[in-house]
Amino acid sequence: MKLLVCISQAPDTTSRIAFTNDDREFDSNGVQYIVNPYDEWYALVRAIELKEQQGGTVTTITVGGTQCDPTIRKALAIGADDAVRIDSEPTDAMQVARLIAGYANGKGFDVILCGKETIDHNGAVVPAMLAELLDCGFVANATHMEVNGSEASVKREAAGGEENVNVMLPMVLSAAKGMAEQRIPNMRGIMSARTKPLAVEAATAESGSRIERFALPPEKGACKIIDAENAAELIRLLREEAKVI
Amino acid sequence: MSVLAIINTQNGSATKSGLEAASYAAGLAAQLGTDAVGIVAGPLSSADAIGATGITRTLHHEGAVQDSGQWAKLAAAAAGAAGATHVVCGHDHFGRAVAPRVAIRMNSGLVAGVTHLPEGGTVRKNVFSGKAMADVAVTTDKAVYTVTPNAFGVSTDGSTTAVEAFSADLGAARETVTGFESASGDGQVPLPEAELVVSAGRGLKGPENWGIVEELATALGATTACSRPVSDIGWRPHHEHVGQTGITIRPNLYIAAGISGAIQHLAGVNQSKTIVVINTDPEAPFFKAADYGIVGDAFEVLPKLTAALHALDS
Image 1: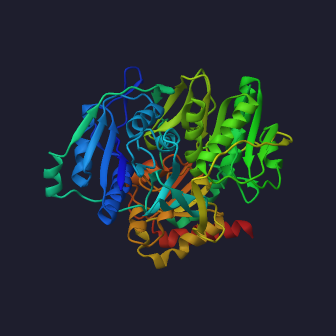
Image 2: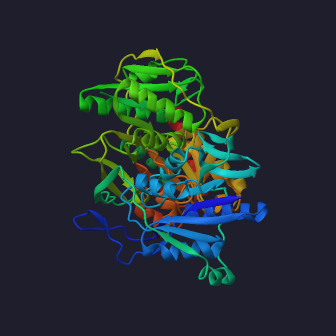
Image 3: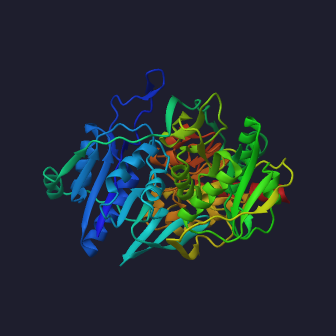
């Protein structure tokens, strides 16, 4: 089975969020970048599990500059076989999807796995765009997947529960919690990741949007503390002051 | 020229997310001085709620469509037939599968998870898990927007909508829905759509103690949720986990009991309109993100809140 996993890097969750250049750019000063958790914990690990069960190869693909290489090496340390980096600084998800589709088209990948969204732009649109560009089936927010021959049986999050979906291969899916468990790379994996192939390709694609400026939300007012003995007062405040119940 | 709303249905009625998309489309159409048109597929028992959002014409594809690629073909055909310059869809599980495909088909820029109507050539969305906002400009002639759940609201001051049969060549399906497993079965509103949420964490000490959480949720008409450790150790099901790696929610009221408020948890709930934190530890970081706090034991405080709600009802 030929598996492709889309890996993005994202600022660590604890990063201070600030902007520069007249609020036009994210201030990456002192920011620690990590593998986007949905890509790493769920999509990548499930791909490695499928390879372990059924044989095949796991390739990762990342769109970005050389600053992404540590992220890519981590994915290789966890167990991917090889990696591709499309050397481009994308302005939006559409450009990312077109660059990945441009690489994947005609290469015979059976399943392309993505995380359900990145934790910086929270768009959740690259996976379905990829499916449309590659003209194949798609499942969003998948929590479980088994591949049986030319078909996959997938569970996905749906309103009020989970849906079971059968999808013909090739397919794209976006992975959510439940798909797999996080794996910590071991020393052997870290050592071998240094010599695994990382191909860098140049490509261009059209985007469809651009961020004009960022803004920070207004500061939250002080928390109003209510005495534990007078819990009913909270209900009154929620009704009369916050007006949420 | 028009604005097209992709309106998902369930059991013959528009979903809340579908009605939010319809309301946004109507608001955008008013801004542009044009009409808002809806596209619906499958059984539709009443179009009243759709009309009330301000959608004046509803294109109705009689057969239900499950496949995201077929849905995109249907929506793009409807956009063509209606002369739509903008397409709006909910940013729920349905919109995440369909709207990006529509954007590719129409070669239109997409802004995912918008929270406001466009203003001055840009449209606002949340980024960095709610820790910042971005104003995004679409650089193509047409645009696709997906609307963040519970951000824009459902309008009810429209009138009626004219329902017209609509069909298009959808090609073959590649995705087949074979079953549905209800998460709760107790009639709770699904978490991503819930306006009121009661959540609890390790402070509850064990799954056998969740009765007091469920009782408060029932008294409020709220949906239950939990923190990551609680779902990881199996006290509560995965689908209840809200936070960075679980579900992101945006309810009007989020009550958190026995959750310290790690930054990963806050990332999933910090867009809630009102946050109430109940914790025995006055130094719990969650109090900094809260609107109201009670320093106390959830085992004592939750039943008191439930009793106070019951007292109001009687």
